[in-house]
Image 1 (tube, chains in turn red, green):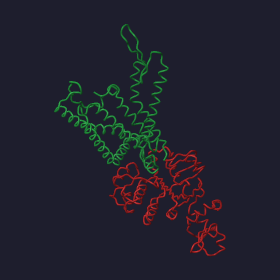
Image 2 (cartoon, chains in turn brown, blue):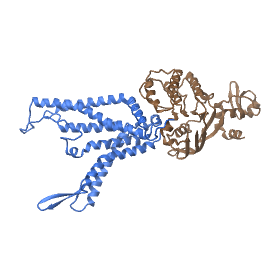
Image 3 (cartoon, rainbow over the protein chains, first blue to last red):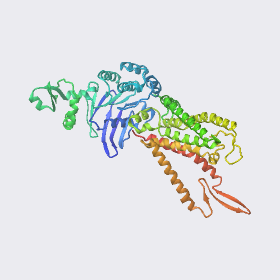
Image 4 (cartoon, each protein chain N blue to C red):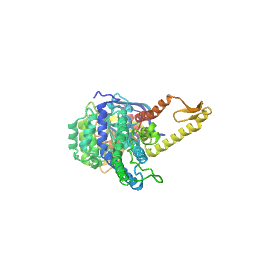
Length: 277
Length: 283
């Protein structure tokens, strides 16, 4: 669905990517994690065609994003972290925007708007940031775009809305669609994503699906100092040490992505070595 | 997936125009009302201040042209202003329409519709107030100062023919055509300069004009043979034929071509550059 080869990108002299490679497949929800300023949004904007690579190539849905052809733009929807909506009513906005997307599903849009509890007759500029975001999420999903790029989608959403967000995203994925979610709020998407990608210093330093992570790593709490000593990563907590261990006994555990993220950014080599075996 | 062309689709362009209108009509309506209000205020001021010929043709001409240029360029410099910020730029560029369609939509509103709307508003204010001024002239007949020549009623200035206006406007429609060039330049500038585009384009245009003036007066003039002068569109000299002087103009009939190109080519070329610039714009 998306293939990025040897991507080089810089803002003036500040190099952001130098030789980044990436492949996104349909039917998968990707979580793109990384510190602030590591290039998560820049990567999304490169895939969306809003920034052009200095070197290397990007192919999305068989097209070159930078050409920004309408047939590409209607099939790739980027939900930016920061946005501006016009000062018109929600229905009017939808009426004039939806026809640009030939796969747009009006019933689905109305359903999401109801689920998110967005006032359907309100003017967009009178809505809160969170409500505006919910409108855009609803619209993004209703476009039926095969590739959705969501930049910090849970920013500004309240607790209930975050839960609704996870629900609608989980229901929207199918074998023809790929969703890439960039966030630094790992907990918000932990139960949602199929695959985690960690970006650091302009490179993808970790790229694994959650099933493989659960089969190779064991996440557990323990008061046992010996176990803690063997851990690949540990954090002290009230419930004992939170540990990441090698899953040699094939035990079941649910990956704690926040902890995994911290562990990998500290020592990517060790973790990648485990997954290469 | 639809089968529309990726370069231009009439139905998609209609959607774009309709979307632009819906999102901006309130702002446009208020802006046009403000322009009408300012024109009304200005003409009333002229009626009060000029006790002799009130709204004569030069006042009308100057008001029409300066109003058109000032409000038009201010508007044109905002048309692609959203590309100056990441927040607004992504929304604009991600809309599934081609860059050509987006440009043509901007040209429609920024050049054609603005020109028509401004002209309609100008005449909506100008015609009744010139008639009002003429009533004053008719009710209190007056002479030009220090003469016995009666002040005639004023004509309505015709922006399209330049009738009764200055010579440059009657012959070449200099400011009328110039408006489309200047407007295209400000449209391009609104993409080139993310911030302070209006001021920057003014500086660029003044600089370009001064450079052309220097080339015209100091370089081309020096290259011409003795006795020849140069104009913006032709070179000419006077030859004596018996008792009469005759003017020899080069490139002769080509001057018409040069004038035609000067009138029509700059907006087209600038729009072409704007299109390329739009295609390569990153946010």
